[in-house]
Image (cartoon, rainbow over all chains, first blue to last red; front, top):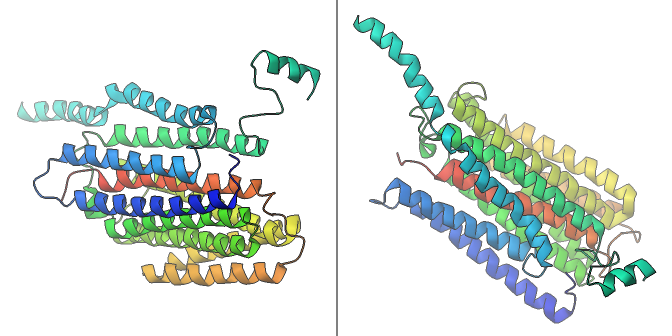
Length: 115
Length: 261
């Protein structure tokens, strides 16, 4: 990034304040969403994930200047996010494994008690 | 430009003199470090999700964790990110006093965050009976937020060192790094004994005042940064924004997502 003229710096500072207000607004929205009556838990979860991703993107694009950096640097930053999503998919078979293990552990004891 | 570089340029390959980050290799190094660090947090968050999913004994976050307090902590980190970009903008204007002022404000933001986190942990451990070994909730919560807290502590120390370098070169960096780390530890220690969030805020303000005072006492004409030499400030800013970014995700996944009480 090589933005150093006074006009560009002044423009950047205005942008920083705009981003700050958006981040504060989205945080308030996140807090508000969890108290909305009648919304299903899954819908709240999805809204929260979208809001968090938006906030993270705002920080990366404007505070970390990815919006004006070379594209390869963006690839470096995005790669871990993609790998983390893959990791989550890799863990899908293990979701609820502890609950299942506890259920199986309880079954013989319950069966013995019934006998 | 060397002959090899000219040859590379002719074939459309980026020459060695023009890396991804022409300002410094340090900046590229920080980006690579952050990418690796993001994987650490990604692994912890994915493990957290895998353990939490379907566990009927998992507590409802809003009943155990203080959402209002952590919302304040999130807001504090966002504010400290803004003071960090203002610090960088100041030095790019050639305004060294502005750099010092905004760096100190950023450090105070980090110290307050750690003080409030220490307060939160104290409440969870001594009032709620939670611990890292009690159950999966305690294990994942304390490891995840603790790992992030270590990053904030490292960030405050790093920022203090950069502040020291801004006021008095390398010697100043060492002194201010030690002062910043010690002041933060004092804030954490005090907050873990006093059951009040206000103590964290007051303690951080006092510690920030101390850091500012020492920086002013050290101030000399040998400060390292100027309008044309501020790469190190940009690099520490990248680290600090990353810490903010990760907290945004931790706040959502650990504190907000889940059934309501």
